[in-house]
Amino acid sequence: MTLGRLNHVGVATPSIERSVETYRTLLGATVIGVPFDLPAQGVRVCFVDAPNTQIELIEPLDDASPIAGFLRKNPAGGQHHLCFEVADIHAAIADLTGNGATVLGEPRIGAHGTPIVFVHPRDMGGLLVELMEESKDH
Amino acid sequence: MTLGRLNHVGVATPSIERSVETYRTLLGATVIGVPFDLPAQGVRVCFVDAPNTQIELIEPLDDASPIAGFLRKNPAGGQHHLCFEVADIHAAIADLTGNGATVLGEPRIGAHGTPIVFVHPRDMGGLLVELMEESKDH
Image (cartoon, rainbow over all chains, first blue to last red; front, side, top):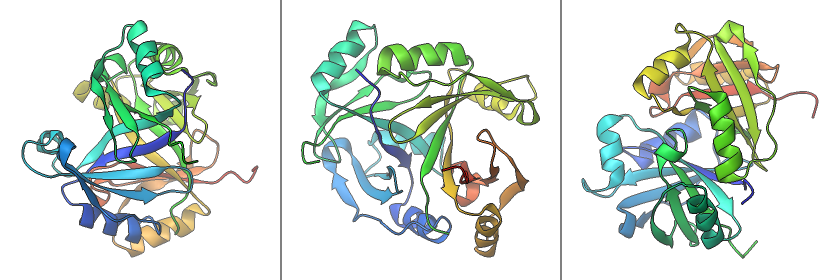
């Protein structure tokens, strides 16, 4: 595997609406997507575009969401994960596990409609890293 | 201000050497800078390139470093800040303070040799955001 593009930075927030307003007012974000639910993951997400990558704002859909647990520890919100693109999710998983790393569960479809998987933070210096198969559309 | 490029993601680590090995072995990073000290900020840093942005690995130089405090709470390391580029640091500061946000101290020279400033996390949904004046070299 070769380190791919940083597709997005995942940022947990108690309120996508308030965060969008912050990014718009304070940082001058202008390209902001429409929020949508990912019920299988218990979250609502919204992408804010920077010129070279995206911020994925993530709000819990309910108290059982993994993001709800994150917000109990960080009530204001904060950086949650980094998502890098890979050419082939299964090849990436084989590379990682061959090098002794643990991936969390089976690949599933992520916010951009392609397969994703998370790497255990204990293998990545405390960072939660998401790997996302590149879209074949671009 | 218009939201600029994500110049880098700052990642705190107890050991740049071990983190470099992790990014190289597990994620396939190939373009990795030479670590260097920023004594005025109490840190040693090393840039790992992704195709569209950089990871800034940050290790404390001593126990008084702000990164040492971060590592006491997160011993394995973790995401520390996001750095966005701005055209003019003084104009950015004027925009932020005009909108009621707090910047932490005066601009100083950052790891890429241009002026930087940090925005208070309470204004940015718990995120520590660094603004970095673009290099005039590119």
